[in-house]
Image 1 (cartoon, rainbow, N blue to C red):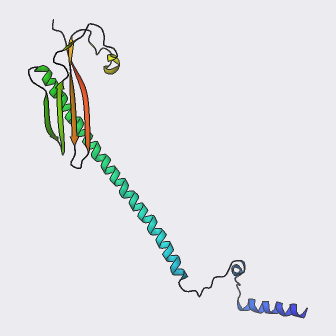
Image 2: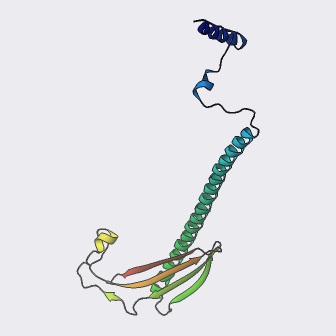
Image 3: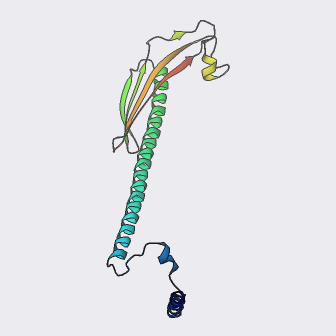
Length: 183
């Protein structure tokens, strides 16, 4: 009993010297605080993780900008191709009115894009309609678009657009011009 009282007295004296005893140290393994460099290693590890996350974020942003830039250049080349195709459709209409002219191939510039425009007749003679409706024509052009008489000529129009950085667009259309019968 006397030993128990002595140990209790020692505990009380220790509590008086240290009013807040470290209860965590008794439950977890104690780290030697005097070990030099542990804080430096933790700081370096944290910095490495932050640098990796930051570099991945920068890579994803620059990659996204590259993809967006390429898509923008392609869409601009597509619009230039559509514009040159419209020019080709006007040329086809002019060729349809002037049958003595031959097919054309031209190199034009639409903005910063080089376009190769090719317009040709698919047949030398006009196709005469038989008086019956052409199958599926209404579904393509709408009701009433196919006349029951007259004739038509078709023209193959192609436009190839090439940009300064190498993007290419090729558009093709088969244009039909109806020639109504003269009374």
